[in-house]
Length: 227
Ligand code: ADP
Ligand code: MG
Image (cartoon, rainbow, N blue to C red; front, side, top):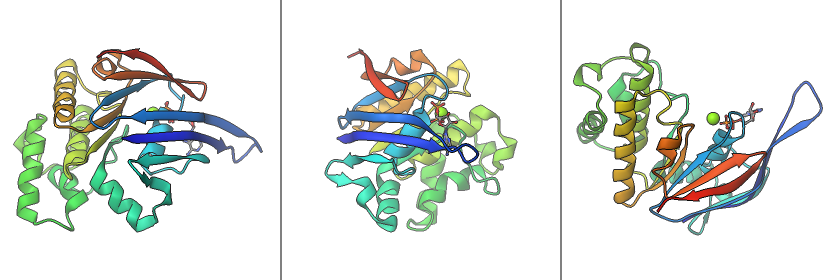
């Protein structure tokens, strides 16, 4: 169970001495093994909320709990170890490392604590399961299409077999066939017991979740229950 408790976040403008409130007293409970979808207008704070939930951005107030672990009470190393083991994050802008090949990007999160061969085989299996062909494995990210980069980013987020998948617009660059492939993959991950937190513009994708939330004017509201 993940609990978002009374989270608020503002950004300070450097040039103006004023703040913009992005999230205001957001509460959210996400049961283990469920898939929640969050939709909302561009700039409404969806990525900010995902970053906070994932331990990448400290909220101004409020707490994030993974069961009884208070994420922002963990110190740096403990927090990054916890994040690496527990959370797979798919960034909206992929964040692939430009000087590493496709397969190296996927292996990277675990490169320092697993046997290389075992890790390579796992990376290959993951890449193939989301339709990345073998001839792309040794390419640098700059040689990939947007959709291919997105799928490599998804493979990387799965390499440590995390319990929780946090996905920021994971189908934003995909055609219908590949989008459906990602929907199937997320559905499979949920069946395997993983928790999925997904932000999307695509209501068809959002609809596959157990619950649909809208983020608007700093607040989350429950939009629909589809199971
Ligand atoms: P969404 O993902 O819903 O499009 P974001 O969470 O990316 O929205 O951003 C919400 C708002 O916060 C936007 O107005 C954005 O410009 C602003 N913002 C995001 N990150 C920062 C930051 N690091 N510093 C200042 N403003 C930011
Ligand atoms: Mg965003």
